[in-house]
Amino acid sequence: MSLRVDSAPPQSFSAFFDLRGNAKAGQLQLTSPIGSTLGLAKWSPGMATLQTGSDIRQFDSIELMIEAATGAAIPLDALFGWLDGQQQSVPGWRADLSQVGAGRLQALRDSPTPTADLRIVFERPQ
Image (cartoon, rainbow, N blue to C red; front, side, top):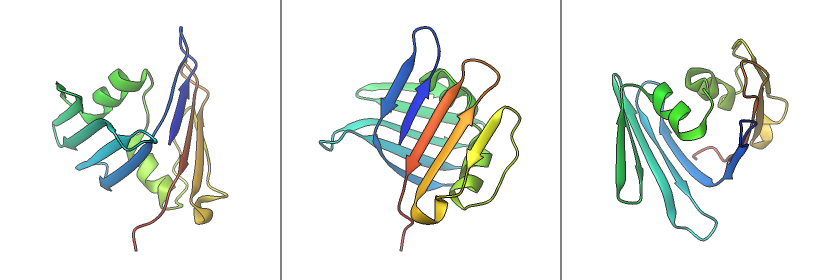
């Protein structure tokens, strides 16, 4: 997974990920190429937590947590649909689902600013 946010200053990160659950309740673990945990996000209705190292931050929603962590609002409901190959219309976002069958997804946010480029390479659980 990689995310580039064209903010001031620009932000970008890449990580391996393990995503479980759905947009309502789940968890996302991010790991570095050498296998160390970069962060663990957990969410359920009305709450979300983000653990990075020994720091644990709590948020009222997964959307607020994502925006605080990345600098950009990412439409989680739509993201789960996109990963399943379902076209989801989200104002300001364009998702390229042409390679989802091969385990690749790209979604671009044109508005509002800052613009963002989300790229995901994934395997479906067997």
